[in-house]
Every structure is written in structure tokens, then in C-alpha cells.
Length: 387
Ligand code: 3PG
Image (cartoon, rainbow, N blue to C red; front, side):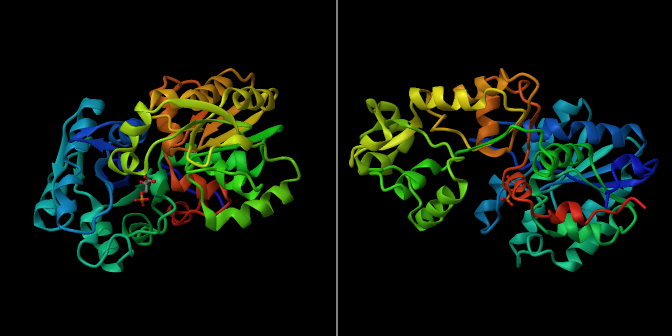
């Protein structure tokens, strides 16, 4: 059943409750990647242009202790949004109560406010994350319609999406970003134009498969619990899983790795070895040149490519070649739909300057993976059906 989108709602003079996913990475009080904010702008702008009074809310990080509160405030995010929007964003540093209610009541058509991190409500009994019915009802009472543009959180059934939507059976709609994500990722899963290639990496995934083939992986990251599963997949795939044939490896002491992983590997000498020659004291951190050529060959003629997970520790220049080569190969594919499933590979592609070279870079991490697996997303199923 098709879901309503924001254009199906009358927003004029309405208090528009808009869930966005502004769970952006931060380092030392600075937003290091504002893509999720940028991607939500068209929906926010549309609601403002239609005369809506926009009430934005998002989670940031995970809140378990009092100490988590200050470092996960949305204050900086509101500031960044204000710069990007070129318009005042009234930041309300609470998640409920009179201050918030008064700010909502004072909002005029075409104005926007953002309230504090929805997960502040997790401190006292995980109210947001456990979809506490009282919390969903309270937030719903602040508005007239609900718009969900938080694709990155759509795999969660929380008070700020499913909880609120349950109070607006006819007036809960998808924002433009959520709709775009569903179109591209859904299209790739449901009916891809073939040849279809999925590139999966991240978390040193290949080493679990090497182990399943009985190879020495040394100190490389490897999920021992999944070795049997990987064996089963290799058998089932019948040659359709193409694994790396060589890797860039380093030897670093356990102490140096424990003290500063990135620092230790950045200083270490590298050695390219075939996958059947990984030393027992070494660990692989990127795919090697033969693998890059192999992958490039496999990609020739592909018409749909979905990529999730970088090919190596791209944060350190000398282990970024595999990831860069994938970006390059996908950017040069003719007439293909190329989709990055979010998370680290999206961050890698954007930081390497390939932001505009893909058909779609998802803002989801876990959400895009679950959607690619074919699971229904609660943040989507909770929205009103088009009648
Ligand atoms: C994400 O970054 O994947 C989303 O914002 C969801 O965050 P979560 O995994 O903390 O629920």
C-alpha cells in the first residue's frame, strides 16, 4: 500500500511535527559530516513555504547516563541547520513541559523550532526507545500533522516515529528524503536492472570468509561465530561471491594497537600479500592491487550496484586505496544505478569527493541494511496509507 507523502497534507497554518535524523558525527564539539542535515532541507523548506509551523525533533547518540546528556545536545545541530537554512531556528533545550509548549504556541507560519534530543527521554526508563505510549501521545499533542523524514531511524519503532504516528492515522506522511530512500533502495531490492552487483565490506568482513576457506588470517579482524555461516554462504552462492585475492597487511604489536589503533597502523610498514600468504602475526587492512583489478573487471557492464561497507581502513590514507578504487569504478560506470547504503562507505565516498557521482547515497546505516534485507521498516509502515 502506498504511503502518503508531505504533498498529500494541508500544511497551511498547521503545526507540523517533523521527525528528522540529525544523528550526525561530532568530534570535539564540531559536526564532522552534516550530510543528514543537508538532505533534510528540501522537506523543511517545503513545509515552511506551505505556511507550516515546523517543529523539528531528532535523536543524537545514545543516552544511558547523566554524562551523556551534555555531549549529545542538539544545540550545535540547530545552529548548523540555521546556517544551512538561512533562517532563524528557535532551539528549545527540553523535550517536554511549559517552555516547549509556550514556544510551540508562539510559533508563526513559516517559522521553525527544534527541541532537544528525543533520547534525553531514555534516561528515565528508555521512554523514547521503548516507544512509551504516554510520551508518543504527549509529543503528538503538540502538533496537527506528522511528517517522518528520518530514514536513518526508520528501522526503530520509537515514540518519536511510531508512537506519534499512531495518533495521526490520516495525517502522517513521508518527507521527501524518506520517500527518495525508499524509492532507490526499494527499487534495488525489488526489481533491479541486471546485471546486479552488491559490494559488501566493512568490519573486515572478507577475513571471516577466508577463515571459512581454511586460510590463515593472522591477527586480522574476523568473526569466528560466523565462520560456519560464511561456509554455508560460499556453498550456496556457487562461485557468485567474489572475494579479495590479495591484501595490504601490517605487523603491529597488540600493545600499540590497544593504545592507539589508527596511530599504530599509520606508522607501520605495509606489505601486499596474496590471501593465502597472510602471516600469522600480521593483519590485513585493505584489499590489494590484484583485487582492485579483479573487482573493476567484475563491475564492467553492471546496471545496478549497491555498495555497503568500505574496502579497508579508509580513514588512514595508505589503507584507502581499495575504497577509493571502488568509488572511482562506480563513478565511471555507464548508465548504471549506483547506490551507497549509508554509514562508513557513504562517509568515505563523500570525504573522497565522490558525493555527486552516485545515483543515491543513503543517509541510513542500519536502516538501509535492514531495508536491503527486505525487512519492513516501522518508521515507514506507521505512516498513513494513500486511500
Ligand atoms: C543511525 O545513525 O544509524 C541512526 O541514526 C540510528 O541510530 P541508532 O543506531 O543509535 O538507533
